[in-house]
Amino acid sequence: MAAKTLTIDGKQVSADESVTILDAATDAGIKIPTLCHLDGVYDVGACRLCLVEVAGISKLLPACTTKVSEGMDIKTDSERLRKYRRMTLELLFAERNHVCAVCVDNGHCELQALAYSQGMDHVRYDYCFPKWEVDNTHTLFGMDHNRCILCTRCVRVCWHIEGAGTKNVSGRGGKARIITDLNQPWGTADTCTKCGKCVMACPTGALFNKGSTVGEMERDRTKLEFIVTAREKKQWIAD
Amino acid sequence: METKDETQTQPAPGQPGLLRLATAWFGGCAGCHMSFLDMDEFLMDVAGKVDLVYSPIIDVKEYPEDVDVCLIEGAICNEDNLELIHKIRARTKVLVSFGDCAVTANVPAIRNQLGLGNAESVLQRAYIEGAQSNPCLPREPGIVPALLPRVMPVHEVVHVNYFLPGCPPPADRIKSFLVQVLEGKEPQLVGKDLKFG
Image (tube, rainbow over all chains, first blue to last red; front, top):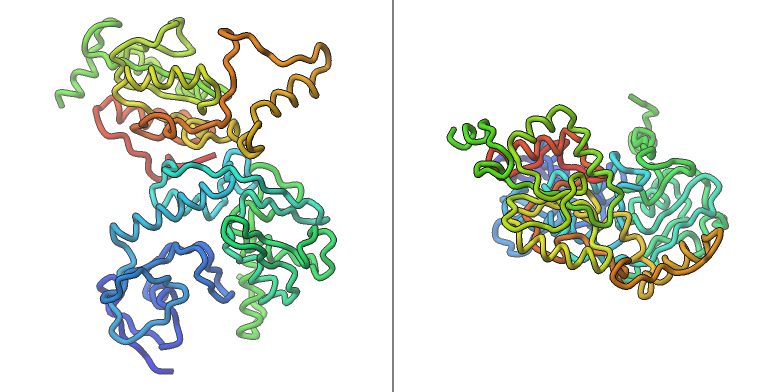
């Protein structure tokens, strides 16, 4: 449990050596934009939204998977970072079919919220318009691959919190997709416990409760926090 | 202050001093124009400050020269849209993508997901499979414009100066945008005024 001292946005910060830049910044009240990060689940650095500048290192580093070290001088906001964050968001919007006007998550979507926070008023890249399916075979939930950003939050809560291991990632690059069990329709996946944690975790409208229509899909993340607190601190408390 | 004084005087239509405003309607549902009309009494203020030279809500056939600002509703879907958007760009100082269809191509572009031949397959679906009587594809060269192979947001075709997203943008957002334009400012959308869907 050695403490490290570092500087984040000019502010002197002390943090345990085991924590990430993101944890240290959050503790210091400095907000770094994140998308694939979900409190209580391990980080994978998938979305690249939390990239930060570290003095002396030419490449940008993801705050969620980079551990703090002694004397680090970190910048969480700069013209260069804003440029890359907006570029990343625009590429996410261009990659699949995000039609906000007809999405169940419209108005509650983390991808939307981040886009606004970075001043994204249009996408400069050509949209790809890929052909993706909607899996509506499950009795309770649906999965629309058009809206998936491959943050893998659903995979991580399924394996790490529920321990079911139903969700997984198949394929690479533009063909990568979330699958259930052995790449079969969700409704036929025997391992799924129908717990709904994946739906609670999803930042966009990709996973939804069946029956929700445009703008109706609101998630209750406090349920996930409750379970995570119970697991980690053995305290069954809710706000 | 000078700019403000200028906009407060109310010259007669066609007189110098009035902002030459146009609005155009491409592949969209007209909802953005409906929202424009929802500005209600603010339209009276606008009417005193602009010369509306081209719009689906007035009877002008040909897009005029020397337009100051044009709001474009809708995505670029067919050959007529493509021809007119180039003409509009050449004759307009400030082009605004007005609403999600213009900004992102939105719902009209869902047909792009069907890949090559999507224009034929959507016509087949609508006019042959969905027809209750007299199934036939609409083909009237010179009257019914052919669909483009791919629906595009406006800025994929011509340079766009500003973006006003929303499906539709609420009247308050259009108002806040227009007020900035009329005051000669660079219009900026912040907070709740920057929103898709």
